[in-house]
Image (cartoon, rainbow, N blue to C red; front, side, top):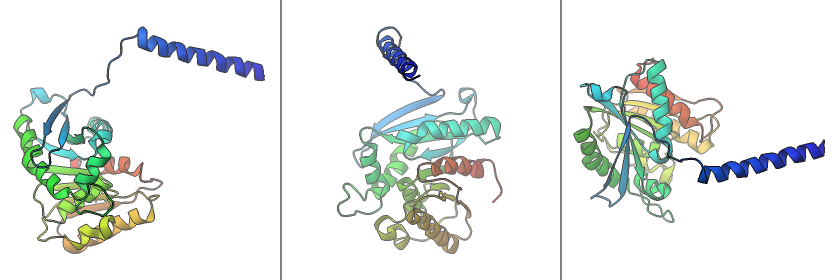
Length: 274
């Protein structure tokens, strides 16, 4: 029996090496692309960062004169394919309203750039932190005008979708009365940043918004506490806003965002009841 298993393993190993060799020499190789998407790149004059904008268009977009709502996605280096797939499946099978997805990503190290862009205050020993104010200006003065110049979008119908530090950035805009976005999907927000800096330094008046908050039931206690404190602040200070919070069962920090993206988009674009 042992010899049989060894021979099988040896054959699989040889086959694997053969396929790798053929992959290099015998087969054409192409990068996988997502249909109905395009990319715009630019260097910001505000913070000197090079941004890539990944844009997912609705099917039949080129034949339509309709103007669509926009969803701006943070952490698009990793999450643009995920959210594109989720939204298109929900559109096809769950009657989700059509929108244009704009993913904001980086050239180079995404971690270093997101740490700079998504954090609202400088923290000692945390390199490049505290650039959220400049990034907000990049979005308002450079990214949105670039998108709205080139794409058929419905102005004043914008949603921000952010997870973890991206959720912190969304809360920062919301609690500083920013007019950039009307809707927010805030997943597993890192409100704990700099001893709850965003909650302690909020700047009213706050604008009426639609706010979806999510945090996984298996996330670390400080992450769950972050979202609970954010909800409590919103309940007290933004009472006229439409809002919903969920605690997806069995989801940790890595998996909870999948539920947040799906449920948040359905709540906003399908009119799901609170």
